[in-house]
Image 1 (tube, one colour):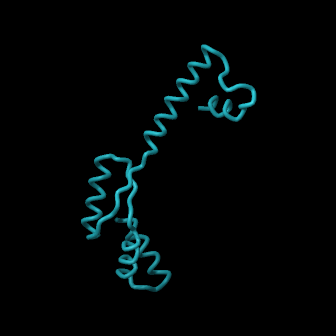
Image 2 (cartoon, one colour):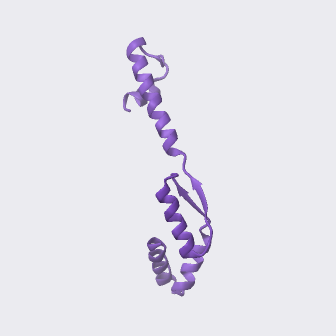
Image 3 (cartoon, rainbow, N blue to C red):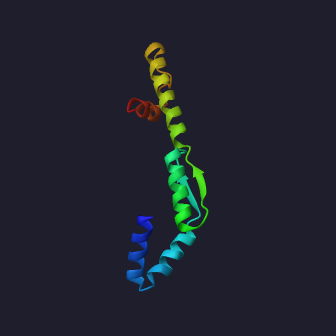
Length: 102
C-alpha cells in the first residue's frame, strides 16, 4: 500500500492532478496479485483488499515448484553422468555448459 501511495504522490506531483483521484485511478487499474501460495502472502492480500475495498484475483506463482523440479533434475543428471559418462553427446555443447555451471 505504501508503494501505491508513493507512486500516487509522484504521479500527481508531475501531472498536477489531485492526489486522491490519482490514487483511486491507480488502485482501480489493479485487478490481480501474484503470490507464491504462502499463507502470509494470502493474509497480506486480504488486508490489501480490505483496505482498498475491492477484490483482487489471487494468481499463484508456480515458479518455485518448477525451480525445485529443475534443480532435482540437474542433480540426478549430474550423478548419472558421473557413473555413465556424457549423456548429452557432443552436439549439445550449450546444454553441457549450462549443466556444468549449475
